Image 1 (spheres, rainbow over the protein chains, first blue to last red):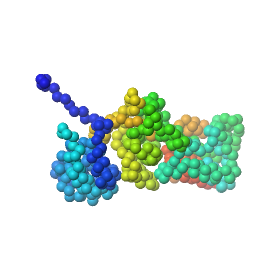
Image 2 (cartoon, one colour):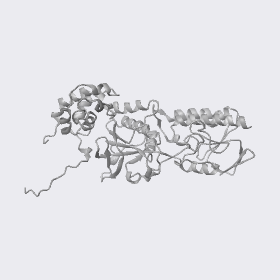
Image 3 (spheres, each protein chain N blue to C red):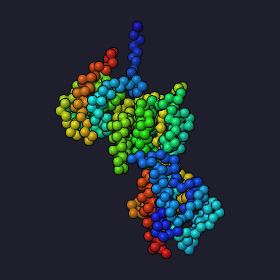
Length: 114
Length: 328
């Protein structure tokens, strides 16, 4: 097709009806403690990686709950698995296991065209 | 009623003037109470039993027309043409629910499947029909927190205190009845201040898979199949979010209401900016109005839980008793 020089901007709105919850459900089943996240951000505050690169552990929960699989995949690579987030978490979530579970399963659920 | 019982116990003769057909106020329409799902009728029966043994009179479907204080006595005239004389007056006019039609953008009474928390409470009380379009059970349900509270557009800047936990409680009740449904709560802040409130919130996440999304709904619109498209910001990820739901529940707040503003005018006592009645000191004199001999009890002074109301009512009785002892 002829290139008219226009770009199509991807909509920023999260369309929840398009949400694929399979990865989320798998993670929650294996690590139910992740259900009770309060989004307080204590994990991100203490994160060794977040101090050096743009990495936000709290957002991992959101990316997972909104089905942002592509972004999630690149995000979790930044984690060094030091486990400081788990020491801080007020609700005792096993975040390291959450990351490991996502790493293990994400390729299964990643959209084909991404 | 609690104040009347306590004052009768202290040896005073009490007359209760009730606007409605029966005493008990809004509790008559509630099903279960947060945070432990105590059936309302258990509380009501216990209160009823307590006051049925006591010797005081109740004038139902009656309102106060005028109150005048002369030579230390209050002369009261009611809508039933009765004339009463009293040494002290307790105002316990309660609150009104926010009229959700005022938030037109949420479509209450415009769209079929937008209901308020009070409507849901009645449905739960009478085991009512929860089905939506085509008689199917709702698959996705959203709760909107702070409807008519913390909202200057509604004229109410204050927090109504009870809606956060009511939302959590009702979400759990719906999930119990409709285990297949996905349930979302849209909140600005979750104020789980009371005993066992935080525990119930945790249980909602852990056991009932209720999801909490931080963001206030901007609007709802009805689709042709009667489902609702709702829009909000997912403030934690900083992006707009839209979602289709089958049922929308608005957690309506508390307002001082007409009954309380009328009482303020009749008694000649002041209101706060919020419309609730002014107390002379919020710590030490929360049952005292600005007028000598006129006392305040319950949610006519501020939004209160059932528990708060009972305690405030009891303290009102004690203040009245002390005051009567000192002044008679």
